[in-house]
Length: 61
Image (cartoon, rainbow, N blue to C red):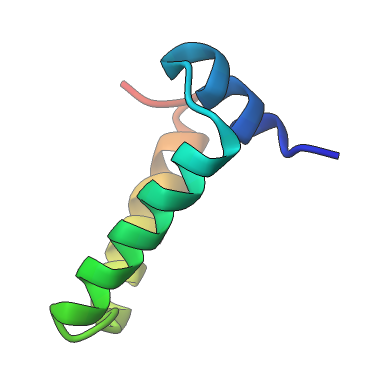
């Protein structure tokens, strides 16, 4: 069964499964060429706090 996000992207952008896979592989290769993902625990904590604050205030403003 296809993931709902994949189905949505395909309907919006008229991409095939092969198109999506090619784009994913290209993005993955670019990230690896730049040294791979970099951990940012402080950035995660800031984002998490912002999301919690927005949720407590009734959503994004």
